[in-house]
Length: 211
Image (cartoon, rainbow, N blue to C red):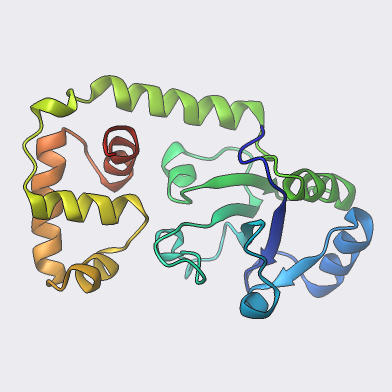
């Protein structure tokens, strides 16, 4: 699946799911340079789409808090590794701009082919995952009320816009200079007004209806 028309640059989260020996094998097999995330400021090329490989099983990683350090507010494309064969839709949605999935026990050659595909500006998602996400987005959008019937205040619009670009509650509060408690109150009211159940659905709504 082609997504942005330019090549991608791949960075490795500290918990990328591959040990040093495996990374060396992948670089050799794919011919793709893989950069450590801590080297971002020295290696990042603005002309390329950044992607981060992260272990699906990392309990400390919060994808919604991850943004492009060179362009604050802009989400980064995510690729998960060591994933189980069957993933819940909610698990997929939390990664935001998910571009690729590598599963447990995949062999080096298969992963290397995936890295080559990702580096060329294409997604590496199975047909089943693509269908799963498409079905979800369609079902959510069908449930939404037309935007002209939604009466959001100016502050609620600001909160929703910040939420759309991936801000956590802490990030929302910091950006808007209000408390996290107030943010939670705004989100509760927003969810009721636009008829969604959670942050993920609110983000989909915002991408569809906000300018």
